[in-house]
Length: 545
Image 1 (cartoon, rainbow, N blue to C red):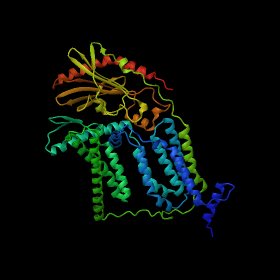
Image 2: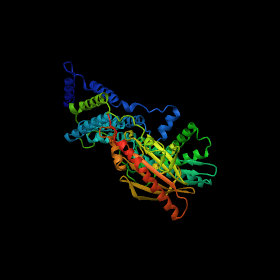
Image 3: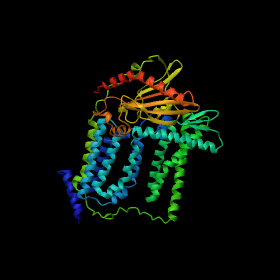
Image 4: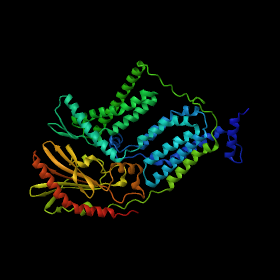
């Protein structure tokens, strides 16, 4: 005799099938599952496109080492694998949720639809990752209540690895890791008895110097090994303090192993060959994985001897979490299909908001090579040191007058670029290898913009540097606007950010030499006022389609 739940399900199937004979629930469920899967593939198709850079070597380097070049596809595949491993647990959970859980699930799913619409309108891919996570969590809550949310929490949280860091955070953290890596590698060389001197991001040896560039910062390796730690925790079913410690140790292991990678690059005369460079990186990453595996075993033995209580894995038996089993309502079953259908339609039909017209060169037109009695010669910007800052226009000049010289660097970023920008500590330095001896805020200000003053040292040279930004309200403003991608919407700012750096050599050790350098900078800054004002005016007149 048919149970009451089976009768209800058969009735629902009959309603869904129309006039024909009612389809059994077991036959209808796979069709609905495949329909949802097809809609999800259409809705989130942008995440399924790999980012190719042209050659296999460049693709490997981009995926493993470039801080801002994460692959949403790889994270999505690994998250799907984590979800697949939970299929038995999800099937065993009681179906149906209370009114509060149902409302929460629907709200999460609708929020995912809204975020997908924002992704389509702004043209920013990573919002689709947020949308996918919200919809997946909402669907789990709709079907299984709070137990469903717990079951999919790890796969959904894993999607965060596909989200880029805000540009100011990425630039600050990446450069700090470059400096720490240089210091750590210098210490390793010292332990090996190899003479070396660390100056900023440079490692100086008697025969040559080596700069720890952006790709060698270790930031990407830390992210990759953290992802592998999550997979290891899930595969070995680690729980509680064991899982937390293993995950927290992963970035430290990656940093330590990255120091050995930089050491290998310094000592290997063939490291400049891209294939060898990448193979060394892969070998070090595998070494980090083996180290993490050893730490996992040590934690397992240590916690067992310490008498740490084992955390039992959820059995997933209906009613085991205090929820009454039951069939989800028809609306709860069809809402995921409707949400995915709307998401797919939005991503197909919506077009990104109008973008800014192609930028017109400004700096070379408004900052002349002759300022008063100062005559300029162009310098080649150290692009390798600046890395992927995304500067759309820059000038790098040295102005001379009667034995005096001032170096001027002005650059424009692009707010609409999103991931990278000029808000970086690197723009405050004349190049690689400089170390700050003193930092303060200068008493003068350029158009209301505070000027950061520094005394920098590189080997036997000392320089006075003035550094400031225009067209930005500061790092906090850059972070939240970047997170929401507001500069790719109608609420974009009317001008791009500019960074200005002035530097002049301090010719001697005494206070008189420093006073002369400050007076020289102040005189030159007054000459620069009018060109910078013209640049402000031109940038403020920009219009957008």
